[in-house]
Length: 237
Image (cartoon, rainbow, N blue to C red; front, top):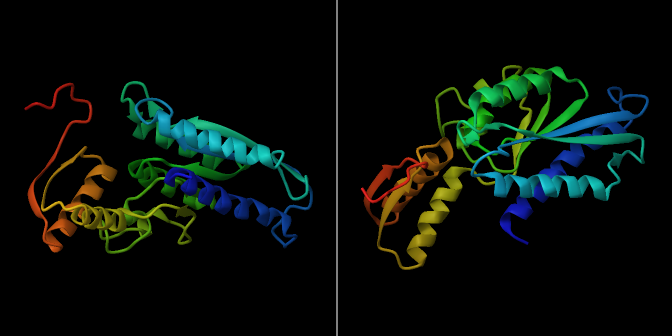
């Protein structure tokens, strides 16, 4: 089983635990069954499609394994896969993310959002879903500030949760862990010097910055660190 499959299974485990709260019979649980909706919000247009389609396939398979039902068949699960990318950008689009988030927040039948894939998209979506207490579970976000204070901007992560109660979880290690592990791995492989390139995106730059700092701490020589245009046709310069 590869790492992405493991992360997807963790996401689904968290999601199922949330959905099953409707079966508990507590005061807040609905008295009758019906249909509940789960949506994914991932970039299905552009370069990430190979990865995100795999995630959608896994979600679909997981729900099909339960007959798309929970609570002993009391509740039917309706799953919808949404695209947060645009053809114009070839990747996640802030305008599309915002529009999607508003749509989810306004739909009372949605109980959970699986996404986003990109940390920058999460920064936009979480504050829109939070006032509606709509659960959001990411299989891919790694920007530390989404959940950890003192790792990013001064007002993070509190600014993402305007109602004061977090509605967001992720099942992958954040950049502050991944970057440090990556630097140590490079050293274990025998590297003595490194040159770092990043794509200037929140994920790529964040991970590269931590790798850079960690490399210096453990004695690797950083020959340089620069951002590149991920869409450039030629990197010879």
